[in-house]
Amino acid sequence: MSASLEPWQPLIPDHPSGLMTSAEVAAVFRVGTRTVIRWERAGRLTSVRTPTGRHRYRIEEVRALVAEQLRQSEENGDIGPG
Image (cartoon, rainbow, N blue to C red; front, top):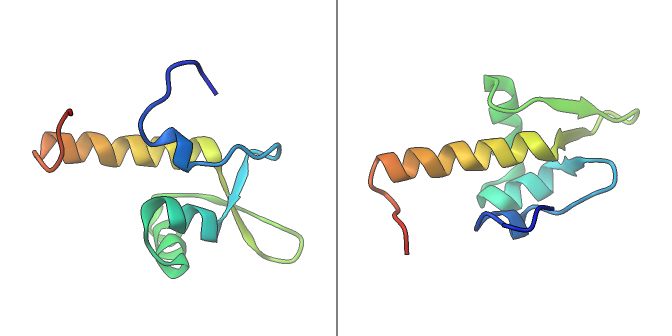
């Protein structure tokens, strides 16, 4: 992680693999795992499949989606500094 953290960065775990489970992604966004799968199907996230067929999501892609949602919320006036 970098020296200057974004407010949401502590919510996203650092795994040596660079991948997160659907449950971890769901926890970051406070949604269910089925929602994460729907986002994948809609093209908002892409997954890597394990040999057993489980979905894994790239941490950097999850961080980018969080940042995008924060930008949209700020533009809409939903959240603001401080």
